[in-house]
Length: 330
Image (cartoon, rainbow, N blue to C red):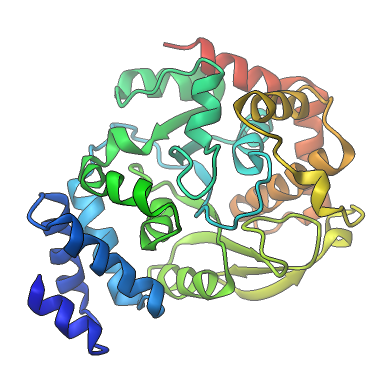
């Protein structure tokens, strides 16, 4: 690792196989905490290359705990984390609305690292029991149309970097990796990214592999469609700029998306939106992301029609039922 660090500090860039090998050594505990931190810091000092990101992803997917779900026709909606906006859990809330609208969701997530309340934090606070038991996950998909992959249960290789990430308390290339290593690798994915460089990086990587994806970066720094400003949206067909009016909504204020002060507030907002009791801003932001996810699955569907499907999911009670069924199914 010493030679690799010297090479990187001199401006070198890793080939895909070399990047994979470095992360494998880290995951197997062969690298000291100091070297691990130095290695991680390189990719905050300069942009990560596509081949480097592919290599890191290769290792995590190779070492993952596999899940036995035969039908991969599902969607994951997930963000990198690290936008520093302290919003409520928009992607997690959206996942239940998507499930209530009749689409299978295999949500991947973890604890908050650069934010205080991640998807795993809020679901655990609501009583969800994490599992990597394929039988349980299949039952949840059957009954609730959604299951949740708690990243630490599927990526034991990441255990080695947890103390470093907690100590740094800043976003690292591991934030970029998380959304890309859903253990199922479902057919459809909606990614939120914390800056446009990462959005472009994802776009380049995913386009090279013929994935069904949408990648989002809001121009004012959010990692999802926030409706506070325009957003850059990358798809296999190219880049577009979307704004609130494209979804049939008015622009919202940033403070209206605030996630509160902790787990209790986060859980309350999620539940309120699913029950149809969220604020206009909260519900609109969720429906916009739901619409983009549905359009990822059905590209021929226009955004406002996709919004209508999400609204029906909430109004009919199916979105909230998806949450309840997920929590109940063991």
